[in-house]
Image (cartoon, rainbow, N blue to C red):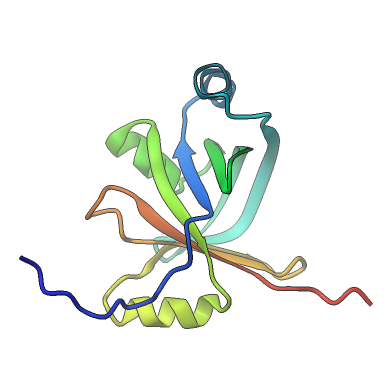
Length: 157
């Protein structure tokens, strides 16, 4: 039996499930008709200068968001570039790729994870809107990554 130890970082409840798909329209139809998820809000997102496995990268994703109670469902289709999502598709095919947790201070959370050898695989920030995220290399045990997101409250002045 494994010895219980104090967690490296105590995470809040899961707020998002990320599912990588090859065809987002087909996936939206399936999840809507099979599970009643939706309606989905769809957007295309270009990321310039993200960091993927220590290298700068540009990518373009097509994303679809829906709610299932308090959980956000995110469907992810890569349109351009190499990302953890393309890596996931090559290694495992379509499926649950990450769980997302909101943290108050992403840098502090990342430094605590680093003490256990858990490093970011994919990172990007949008300082203009106060959003930073990182995917962590937690997929070797359990098969999925952890995404941390920090959304700073902005003054409305």
